[in-house]
Amino acid sequence: MDNSFILLVEDNPDDEALTLRALKKNNIKNNVVVVRDGAEAVDYFFGTDTSGHPSPKPLPQLILLDLKLPKISGLEVLKRLRSEESTKLLPVVILTSSNEEQDLTSSYSLGANSYIRKPVDFGDFMEAVRQLGLYWLILNERPPVPGRQK
Amino acid sequence: MKRPRSMNNPGVIRITAAMIVATGSLVLLGNTFGFFGSSTGLMILALIDIIIVGPIIWWRAGYLERSNAQRDLAEAALRESEEHYRLLFDSNPHPIWVFDLKTLAILDVNEAAVRKYGYSKEEFRSIKDIRPAEDVPLILANIERNALEAETTGSWKHKKKDGTIIDVDVSSHKIVFAGREARLVVSTDVTERKRAEEVINKLNIDLEQRSALLSVANAELEAFCYSVAHDLRAPLRSIDGFSRALLEDYGATLGPDGQDHIARVRASTRRMGELIEDLLDLSKVTRAEMHRESVDLSTHIQSIADEFQNAHPERHVHTVIAKELKANGDDRLLRIALENLFANAWKFTSNHQQAHIEFGEFHENGHPTYFIRDDGAGFDMAYAERLFGPFQRLHGVKDFPGTGIGLATVQRIIHRHGGRVWAEGKVEQGAIFYFTL
Image 1 (tube, rainbow over the protein chains, first blue to last red):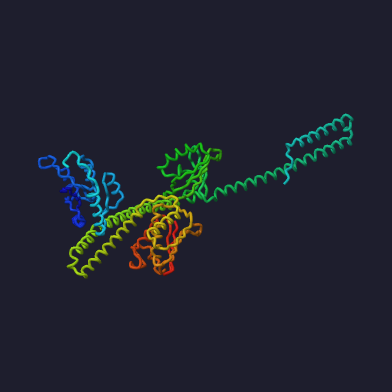
Image 2: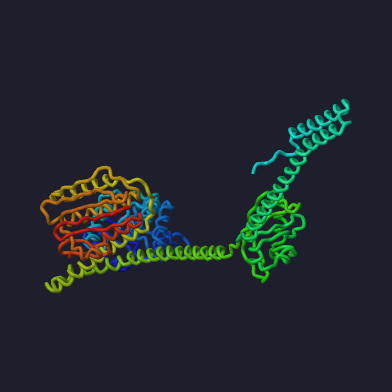
């Protein structure tokens, strides 16, 4: 049974709904876990429980990361992910509306695997998500998870 | 007037001496021979004396007269010359005076100085200095420094008798006057000029400030436009996405009318998306930094033409491009401008089986003017002014697609290069777009 899932980091509820819809329409059956700001995202991976001990959560197969997030920005989250052994190799696809060259450069420099611009047209958006799913969930080989459960 | 020989002329002395010797000899001779004993002898002696001495005296007298006349003439000439120079000094429109280097007292002063400063000649002679008190230490230092220099110029402030201070340009040089070491000073009132200069300076500073403010305002406006356009995209996406969701999930319930409504909603959002993209592109063009270099326009047009032909192999377009046309400007921006111009030509000839697009240059007043000509739909010259406005179109979207931002982009790029862009056209007879850089 495929327990791989997608982590969607998106603050806009409309975009969240549309992304989920697009994934569903494209028969991407993986679960999707949604976190709604940068702090929640960091917390998901590196959060501690009430007694202060690290409480590791299952790692997603793919992270869809928006750049414009409240509290902690997408780039910050990316930086954090790439600086920790446990999350260094996780595939991260930046999914954003920004087409600033600076964002593009920073994202790749910080170690994003891919950069997709959210199109205005939903048809195009659907197509983008379809290709995303096909590639990263099916075609792409997952990196080995360092030292933890497979 | 011929100068008579001076009395000191050695020739004259010789002749006089010779005459004396001759006379003396004759007298002695006469004496020896007892000539002068008789009255005839004495008479002859007397005659000889008269004949010899007479002319000498007469000549001498004439000479004295002539030399007196000469001296009178010279004196007259000297007086005249003195008067000339005194006149030059006194009538000179610039205030001039002479001051003693040691005592700093003013020795002489001309009429213009009297008129300008308001002090009389006597008052001038008695004032220690014509500059306001605060400048005195400066002056003394200046004099010390300048004592060694023959000629100096400088800017100073002087005080008139009525207390007003004027700005002057002072030029002075060393002279010996009435036997004393002195300086001749010429002063020119430049108060008016200095005021005018101050006004101009102030205006310039003002202009620079306003220019800076304008730049800042422009930059802020651009940033604002950009962020607004950017932020509009997310809601647009929502509108489009959920309209489609509505269509997909409830299309059947909506019926054909409802579906048509939704279709129009989606079409509008799509169009709005295009407009926003174009606006953002346009603003990027304005914000981008320019790097000037030599750009090969011909090569760019050729590659653009090739791209279009490859993308639309079904079109028959004959392109004529003048070779080796180079210009000085930003390579990337010029490419964008050429792309837009060519795209227009391509688009508006799409209704013709065979299309003809030409790119070239001609010279006017030594300046190269570039043009791109097509034989397509053209436009009515009456609306020529609207051509370059953002989102202005002279054709409906159904006739020819587009948002009307292309020419606005071209204009902005050309203007950033300091050039002009304009167009000529005739309906259904094509259009020519000209630009200079």
